[in-house]
Image 1 (spheres, rainbow, N blue to C red):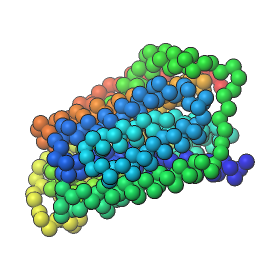
Image 2 (tube, one colour; image 1 turned 180 degrees about the vertical axis):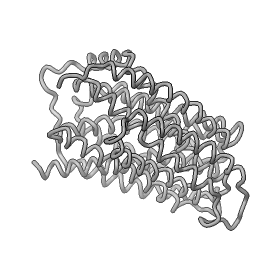
Image 3 (cartoon, rainbow, N blue to C red; image 1 turned 90 degrees about the horizontal axis):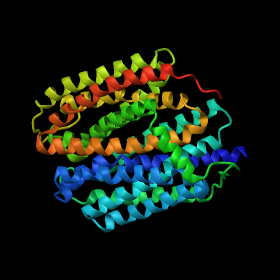
Image 4 (spheres, rainbow, N blue to C red; image 1 turned 60 degrees about the vertical axis):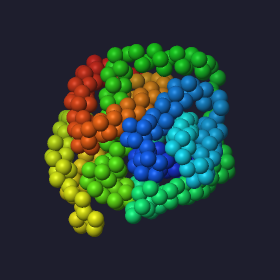
Length: 413
């Protein structure tokens, strides 16, 4: 039993690792389709929507039905679909194939994330073990994000931006997803549906009712605004590095890994800090630091000049300074998710997780499209200055979120 649980954990980790690479490659792919296919920034920004909207739709429609399908079957189905899409990417080098890839990745992740979160509950004996497994899996996700930037950059031809050589990375990704599928097939685990459970349609209605609670509405808005900022910056940072800071395409993608590393370090560090500092002042300090970095970095970015012999030693200061925003951005999302879930009875956790997935996906799409439109119509600095507006809005929503959680009576276990 213990050995099987370990196999399940490894299969979950590899699943999240692979999807982290694919999901967070959208910024790199946007940069490459602009160069390789001559797509405009406004048109390229739609790739985020092809990724995020299916996540929201699949989670919204199928979350309540997954226990009947089986969590392992759902993850196997999602992984198989993504393997096929990765194999097609280098065979059909077109923009519409990139759209199909992210549509497939988004749809599959909608199945995978809900199944994965639910499976962790099945292999955990107590809260501490659950938190430990979740932290490990989320840590592996960030390792996948970092790996993805360097993996893609290894296949990008910095001297020939229009080259299609970058598509060869999908052979490697297809191999990874294929291995992941095989591991899932060889790792049986059950998810019995307890007798007396409400029917799927009732669970679906309960999720909708939960979304109408005032505290949940404030939380949803906070989460939506946060992901809007994170995805807007993360998706367009490679293009910003390339067009505003004048870094080569491969170096632009590598520099974006600083942002991902800061997110990882910020989440690990905040996990310790929040034991000693109340979450509300900590998150407000983080928001102030984010705004300060934007106001300092963007003027520095405007000073960048074209340098054909550019390297890491001669790169603009903004290439290293602006990605540090990830350090301060990182604690916000996990903190508000944890506070919201711990304020609800356990029976509502699955419905709340569904809402988190849905509105996070919608926020990501909105952030990427808005940033892309501003980037294309004005410039990169203006696009990132725009992030100050949702940062100010989160200051307001966090105030009401804190007040709402204080009024709630802690649910009885």
